[in-house]
Amino acid sequence: MEINMAQVDYKELKKGGFMRQKQKDNFSLRLGIIGGQIEADQLLKVHEIAKKYGHGYVHMTSRQSIEIPFIKLEDVESVKKELAEAKLQPGVCGPRVRTITACQGSEVCPNGVIDSTKLAYEFDSHYHGRELPHKFKFGITACCNNCLKAEENDVGVKGGQKVNWVENKCTFCGLCEAVCREKAITVDKSGKKLLFNEEACNYCGRCVKACPTEAWEGKSGFVLYFGGLFGNRIAIGKKLLPIIFSTEDLFKVVDATLKFYETHGKASERFRNTVDRVGWELLEKEVAGVLQ
Amino acid sequence: MEIKADDFVDITDVVCPITFVKAKVAIEELEDGQILEVRMNEGEPIQNVPRSFKDEGHKVLNVINNEDGTFTVFVEKGGLEG
Image (cartoon, rainbow over all chains, first blue to last red; front, side, top):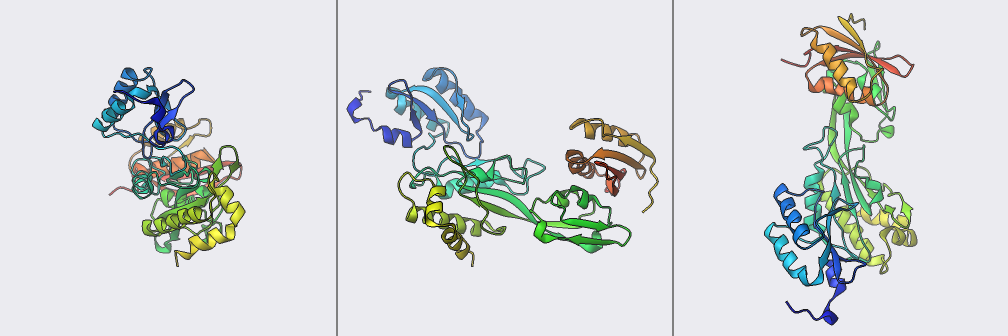
């Protein structure tokens, strides 16, 4: 294939996951991976492409993707075609919604309280590659152990459980008090009483997982963190809302967040910096507003 | 709540994942309905070992905070089964 180098649109290539390297007309191909999962058969195709078009190795990115370095400009179209054969596609880069990261979640992990893998696919179908003033990262973690570092994302989702104590099932063994890291539970064994300080509860759900008699019930939901950054500037995402229970409400809030960013963000300004400039009260009002 | 244990195991001298292995080996020695007394450290062991007992069908009956960084947990073998 003849390629007129003058017509190469590097921006377009980058948007489509081909990251320009130091070496002229060489690209590191980022794959579109959702929640860090890839089929074993797709990995075979990645292996093939790395051997045939690259330098025979891949690079694991910090956000659960795979890059195949040293793809030549003239091979870009053939590589895209080969990827498509394995139902793979290039990832995205530039000022838009990036790879959605997620832990394995409640379907696999004993600690998980939400299905973060499934949620990652839902996020991808809602927001894949959406154009914004700057890069925008979503990360989903299924419990308080926070393997996926919710607070370092522009919007991070953390699985949590709102818990409820059922007196007639309780044997007052004291295990929930022992496992609660927030000291929100006090069990009076001899008096057969239990004190639950809901204010101190951080929705971790450890009491529910531990209780031998199912005297703690948990309703799973999402705790959101806004405006995390972990690059040039480091800032921890802020919790602005109480726990959200339905995915419908979750997406309403995320829609409102992206709309806020589109409305107020300047080009090349990260979401956190936009909110710092425009005001957290305004963002809080917008996101809380859609839940009423 | 006075509970008489049939056996005792101290798992404060080991770390995850040996904590549960040691406790599991001890409970395997017992018959269903018998009670194992386990002394374990606060932190990771108290978070995870009783939960693993639950997953294997054993019932935690009582948890005593020894106020020295350890807990004593009484577990009934097979207490959650049937």
